[in-house]
Image 1 (tube, protein in one colour):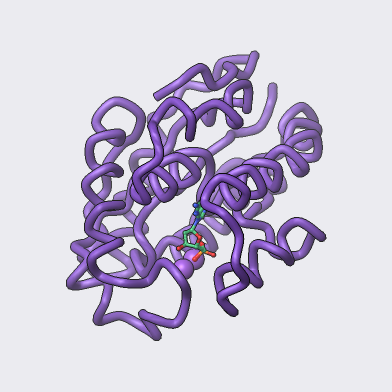
Image 2 (cartoon, rainbow, N blue to C red; image 1 turned 30 degrees about the vertical axis):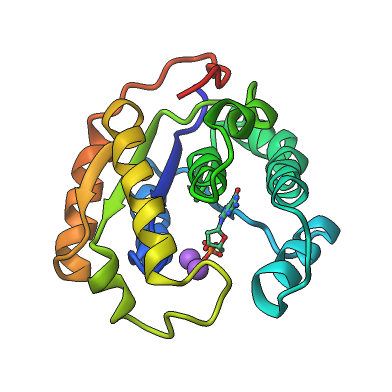
Length: 204
Ligand code: DGP
Ligand code: NA
Ligand code: NA
């Protein structure tokens, strides 16, 4: 049987990366199969390095150009991801196409235009959306260092995320302790049915 394919989405500083690490450990232990973490954007590839410069050092790129790079950065890893799933290994994604769509839509671009480059990507068995208010998130860590970490922008992203999550995600309250959030995530993941074939993303 193919491996489990799980995406975790959320606002900046929602605790997503910590929870992804915990979920990888949990799946490794409970399924007995290797579990891999892919983080998007993957800043290690040539395209990812341009994305990193855009996020951290104010490199100027049009909203459209950076959007297509974020999408291309997902497409450039997808064959590796599919191969692992087919071998029966699990894959956890730290962000995926929902981030891709809502962060650009929050800049004022059309939903359909934002969706188009990601059409056809394999759909996860489950996408978890970690919710935390932008005000709470802004008090965590070094908020404000990167391009999108501004409260007004995060509020627009949050509104879009909540709307999209109703139909596409299971929402998990991420305002509790690390342990509480991890337990909630593990429970959601245990109930997931795994189909043999991966669906292709056809819109939110
Ligand atoms: P992270 O490394 O998870 O903190 O993500 C970096 C930032 O990039 C974060 O503010 C979310 C944003 N982001 C992630 N994926 C995309 C995407 O596909 N498109 C856009 N425009 N922004 C994205
Ligand atoms: Na971030
Ligand atoms: Na992160």
